[in-house]
Length: 543
Image (cartoon, rainbow, N blue to C red; front, side, top):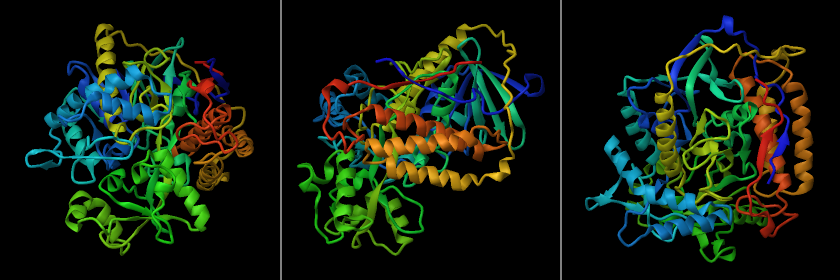
């Protein structure tokens, strides 16, 4: 399928003069400090100079907040074919079977690699404990600290990468744009409040910036998940695909006035029930698998039940489970709920869906190579062919580990083969025609308005009229937001969110069917003729 063409606006968000900006050089530049980025850094030969740039502290990433675990075949009674079949079934016709097979076979090695880094997974009788989650036929999810797997995995990986003298870590540094010359990525322009703008020139660049959950009012993602990597890669000329597929997690703690906390899939995996506001257990009315149905089905079922009962949430019920098991498996969730006076062993937990995982992203091959030469990518910022139109639970950290390692190895090998002939390329940025004052816009209000629009019109249930209205509204906001040149991350994040929103809306309008996490109420059936990816290409690749 030919890519949909979308205008990208200005090639670079800010104007710059290479003669007036500091420069630094690296063999490999990694943008993003989650599981995929750190895995890439650990896979690169220590003889090479590596710079890891992360927009917040290294511990702030979706990877750190991951609760459930990592899927992998470790049980002798399990097999790769079953894990692959579950992944493909969840993906509803858009998974690449060869990619799925490759990754599930790599899973045990990657899990044991984490153990070598120092990660300590939960055990039972001296063996790694396994749990089950929605969409999986068997118990194959490894977990740590009960329900804080991401925190333990990232602790071990961060300790490992900090021990490498060849890796520089630049925290609280915002990547504004990728630098390109003659249709090749050659580094990035970054900013931090202490040094301002800096050019980072690199032989090879790896993108591992994570997702875009902050496009939506209700999300499990931290505030940093603003789709920056999707946006600046698109401006640089890289192809995106599958942007219509935002996965909504069915169970997000819903308490007015609190931040939205994820309630792990593993809670239902251990036997929790979903009940509506009348106490009725309802999931078997929507799917024979009940609470263990794939996430897209559970999210739509909850939304439908909320509408039927005219109640803002449904409830997770763990009261029938052994209290000791509940506290052992879910200490973090128990602590969060306790802050609001809820005892998860006796009280029902109010939940509703929230944006969780961006399935769409940069098109990559089996090694993590993007369509833009010199640029590699791994993790949630990509579309690898693993997830199809609906990600299977606990395959996300696995994907970051596998592709982070491959991208690091491949980019490192190419960088090692290139001579150290670094040079400053005279890249020029276009000057904006007008630069209105940035203080005449309420950026937080604009961001909140965009997130509310996306939740209403481009959320769990969509239709053509709402998508058309959303596209018009985003176009209107872009006309006056993109004209401005902002001096800090809040403005750049808004500009990135608007561009990513436009790609999501365009792809959702083009897919006139329902498939996986993309549900069109005006096209409720799956159309076999649309069993392909929808690629997106920016109109301008000027450098």
